[in-house]
Length: 306
Image (tube, rainbow, N blue to C red; front, side, top):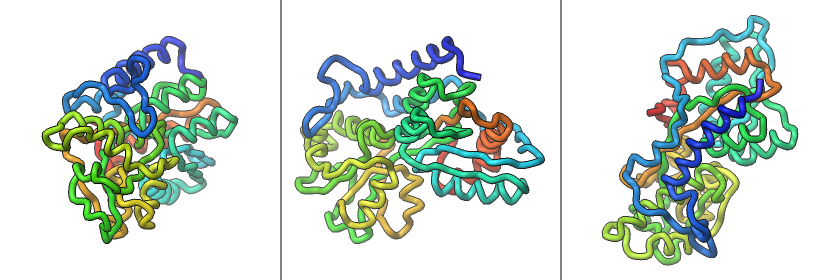
C-alpha cells in the first residue's frame, strides 16, 4: 500500500521545518557556491536532533516472527550500516532456516536513485530523513518510516597523522587535505552542518572558519565508506565520518572527537518498500527495533533514537 498523500504532506512539513532550522533552506544564494557554503544563524547544540520523525521507535518493540518457510529479503541500506547489518544477517539466518538476506549498501541518495530507476527491494534504511522523504515522494515507500538508530560525527586521520591534527579547530589549517562526502549525501550534509556550528564560534575556531575549511576540501565522495577509505590510504589528511565508521576502522585511523556543542546527531529512518514482501519486511524492521537488534547496532558504535 502506498503512503497516503496526507501522510506524505505531514512528513514533508516536518522535513521543511528541519531544513529551515539547520540552514538547509533559505533565501536565494544560501546554498554552497564556489569553494564554500553559506550557513544559517547559530542554533542550540540540540537543534540537529529535530530530524527525528513523528514515528520514533522504541527499542522495546515486540518481536515479529519471520515466516516459517523463510524467504528472500532484499534490504537497501546506507553504507554506514554495512558492518552492523552484516552481523545481523548472520544472526537472523542462523535463527531462521530458509531465510536469505541480500543487502545493497551505498549512499542513501544513490539507493533512492536506483529504486526510482526500477531496482527492487523489500526494505529501505536511510541515513537521514531527507532521502527517505525523497523515496516517499517517488511513491516507493509502503507505510510510515520509523526512526531506528542514531549516530554522531567524528574526524578521522591516518594512523600516522601526517598533518598533526589534534582538534576540530585544526580543520581550517592552511594546506590540510580534507575529504568529505558530497553535499547531498547524508554524512556530507551533517558534516557541513557541524562545520557551520563551529564557524559560529569565532572565539573557539577563528574568523572565517567555514571558508578556510571549505578551501581545504580536496575530494567529495559518494558515501561515508569512500571518505574513510581515502583517509586510510593516506590520500587525505582528515575526513569527517560517523562514529560507527571510525570504530570499525580500528587502528587504521585515529579518531578526533567533535565536541558535542558542534556535533550533529544523525537519526536513521527505515521503511518497507512498495512491491516488497510485507511479512519479511515487518519481521526485519521489528528485529531492528527490538532489544537484540538494538544491542547489535550499539556494539557497532550506533546509539539509540532520542
